[in-house]
Amino acid sequence: MIAAILVLLVVVGTVVFHFWSPWWWTEIASNWGYVDDTIIVTFWITGVVFIAVLLFVVYCMVRYRHREGQKAEYEPENAKLEWWLTGLTTLGVAGMLTPGLFVWGQFVTVPDDAVEVEVLAQQWTWAYRLPGEDGILGTSDTKIITFENPFGVNPDDPHGQDDVLVESDELHLELDQPVKVLLRSIDVLHNFYVPQFRAKMDMVPGAITYYWLTPTRTGTFDILCFELCGVGHHAMRGLVVVDETGAYESWVDEHPTFAEAMEEARNEMSTEPKLVLKQDDAATGARAVTQ
Image (cartoon, rainbow, N blue to C red; front, side, top):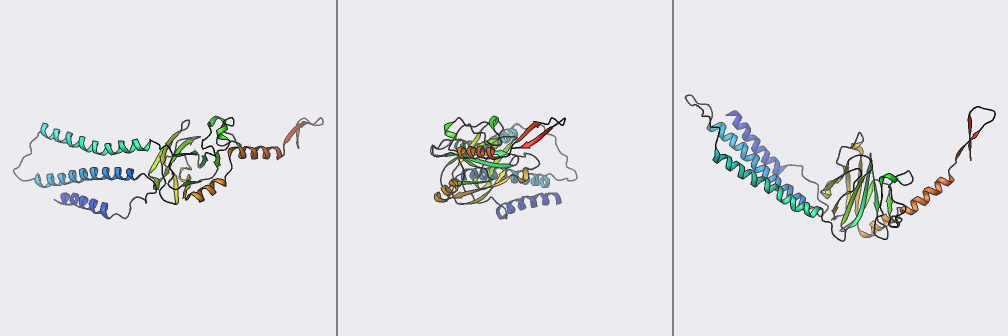
């Protein structure tokens, strides 16, 4: 009986903690309330099953407790019970999967008016690329990434010349503007996740993954890498700021285009001192002369 009482207390404690828990989701800041609804449906289905199973265990512990003179019967097959279990399990699984399929269909169907924003991940920082005045991101390739071209933008693609480069952990988005988030990694698996957006996706080296969202309230939110990516994984954090239109445009204007960044890199290279090795006739080695 003591065991039955303890199991019953687990049931009561679980229900009380669910409805009066001090911890819950962060306030949503995107259009993906459907994700919350899907998780709540899963909570209810699994919660009801959890409580029903434990109450059945309590019933069995009380109803079939040991009594003098009683003997248990072995019944390995019960077709009626198996049909009930199979049917209820099928309904439960379908109830959890069906809402998710509808949400997934919306998750990968990008609106026509969405703007593209590229997120570039590497151990253990974030960087971002936005389309310029032409509204089109230029092509890119990790094979052409250099110190001067850290985004690997194709210099021969005219659409990439006006791309806006953000070499910072802070990204700004415009309020109520749908955004298609293009995800690239240049080293290992990463995952771009903002809890308030309820959306995340793995970033796979050699591929471009994506999802879309519409920011629905202004504010500053944490960016987390949600895929274990090495010893610095815990420090791979950033900020996303949702702005009104005017503030967003001012922030974009603060960052250079790809053409401007390449021109600045060429100017820096032309003004840096160069080391030229000249053969010293009086010595066996070479001496370095700065020019």
